[in-house]
Length: 206
Image 1 (tube, rainbow, N blue to C red):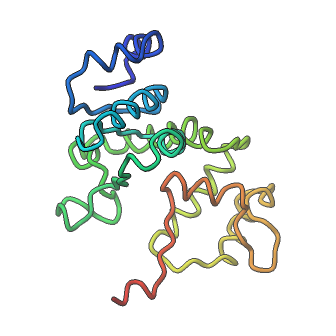
Image 2 (cartoon, helix red, strand yellow):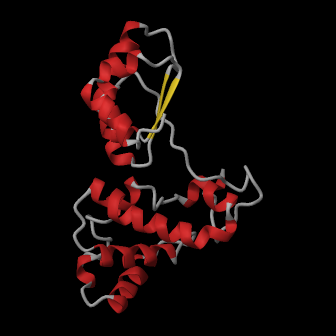
């Protein structure tokens, strides 16, 4: 059940208990972050029949508000799975340039529009759901800098110098410290929204 429908959201807000009672499990709620009030009512149903597992499935595209609701309402009652884009092991259509997003693989001719829309929605919705980033233009440029170094060894000094060249106001992007650590306001946002992932080289050696 897609929870982006305004009519469904209205029914949930007016009487969430009756809404759930009319459903026949198992049920999959997509974009659950649009109706977080459901979680508390689902919890009562789970507690009433704890041995019946897998009856309520939740999916969402905004991890920050979704995880907040899950951890507060469903602690000890939910298994959390991170669904990343397809890997090259799963399909040969994946490549380093275009990645493995399902929509991109299904409609390669429209991928430029999809990527542009994804980035815009990510900046306007997901980033602001995590933290109050006021200067989205600077943040977007910083994101582009990191993307240009995808799959490379992180060089913080080079990142700092590049930021200085593209933006006169680079001090807001990269903190001035001895190790040129990226600004603490931006790095957590990128990690929480799965835009960056730091891989320890030793873990790749098996």
